[in-house]
Image (cartoon, rainbow, N blue to C red):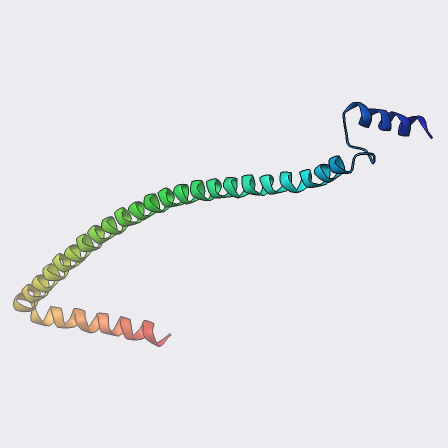
Length: 127
């Protein structure tokens, strides 16, 4: 027998490890890893549940934050859109008023301008 195997055998005897002489201790020793494994599984499941709860809580908080930011951005976009529509209406109303005034005061000049714009539009459209 080598020195290493003798030392390992002595250490096992000193630590009270069951040997081949005690069958009941060997059975208990074999059941111990199964018990430890079951306890480890229970702890792992508990830890997984805690992590899932934590992630769900953080995820829900993040979702609520993102949703509120989205709703604020949507409300702001609606406001800006309404302002743009109002500005466009105002510009179109002023354009119509200016066109009516131009037709009343200078009908031939207005007709010449419209014909020139139509010609330019047709020329660019053709290319």
